Amino acid sequence: MEINIKVLFAFILMLFLARLGDAQSPAVFDVTKFGATPNGDISKAILDAFKEACASTSPSKIVIPKGTFPMKQVKLEGPCKAPLEFQVQGTLQASPDPKLLPQGEWFTVNYLDHFTLSGTGIFDGQGKAAWAQNDCAKTKCAHLPYNLSFNFLKSSTIQDITSKDSKNFHMNVNGCNNLTFIRVKITAPPESINTDGIHVARSNNVNIMDTVIGTGDDCISIGDELQQLHITRVTCGPGHGISVGSLGRTPGEKPVVGVYVKNCTFINTDNGVRIKTWPASHQGVVTELHYEDIIVQNVSNPIVIDQVYCPYNQCNKALPSQVKISKVSIKNVRGTSRTQDAVLLICSKGVPCEGVEVGDIDISYNGKEGPAKSICENVKPTFVGKQNPPVCAGAQTS
Image 1 (cartoon, rainbow, N blue to C red):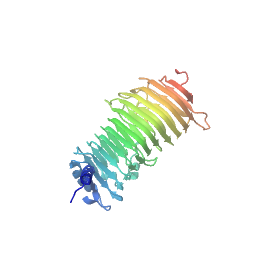
Image 2 (tube, one colour; image 1 turned 120 degrees about the vertical axis):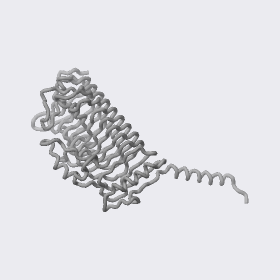
Image 3 (spheres, rainbow, N blue to C red; image 1 turned 90 degrees about the vertical axis):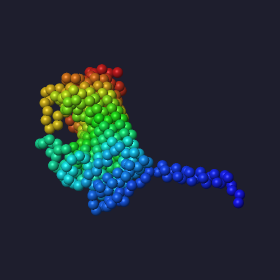
Image 4 (cartoon, rainbow, N blue to C red; image 1 turned 30 degrees about the vertical axis):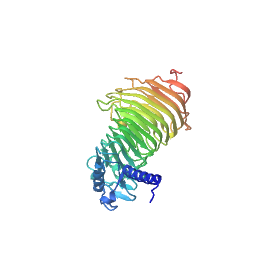
């Protein structure tokens, strides 16, 4: 029988491509195959699946299927041999009792490269009972568990998931390099105390994009030793805004260099864009902060530099902050303020702000007290374009 060489070659090529595709498809580790059921704690099943997936020399995927699964505490710790994806399709549910997590965080990921946390699932921290126990005005704030903690990740992505009702911060980022958050949703009621949406510190090249955050504290908070944080198309509200700091309370804090906030919207928040440092503080540096194309809707204080930040009056306001703020630009901020104080630039009398540029501000206030206003101390900004309200009257204009 005569063999058609072209047909044979095409058949061999198809087999080769099929095997190549199989080799490149990630191995899937469904936690239900490791004993996970909706009726019991699935922590062990997740850890068992992770152990096998982490040992794989080819890309792997751990899957939490649809459904609601109680989870006590999980820590995924690398390094792993190949890229790993953790896909949540259902709801992971913490115990409402914070005492059942005596140490650490609820879901922690450490020392992984090329890690992806994905899926449209929910991390439900069930934090209501914990918020009631945490009265920071009377006692030192308790260190309740975060919903998610990401430490020392490289070239990794957090996408499409939801964090709900965390007992403390929703997501904590520490020691990471080249980490991206995209299409994340964070939700908790306004009365949820100390529930920052995403807290970022001691990290390089972090991106937060196309994300919606509504919580009881800062939507995004920024700690020390941070370089190159890009926040783009984030909607914040309710919450306390996007805040650099507070800084200066701890000795040895390292500089914050390069924060870019662009095309963001604040709705019914206490603040919009904010930099806050403690009075009577230790030395620090904050530089190269750039805010552009910001919409504020019914925001109490749309633009804030506050170097006498002193919640619950637990500090000495008579002594100045020693955190140096410089090279800050605030451009094209428009919308409405819930108070007259649309622009507050309250810099340190010990180390005044330098290189502050304000451009095209258009913020209105329709209350009975009068029009929107600005308050400036220890700062001489330069200006570009329209200023409504007039900002720091008498300062240099370009």
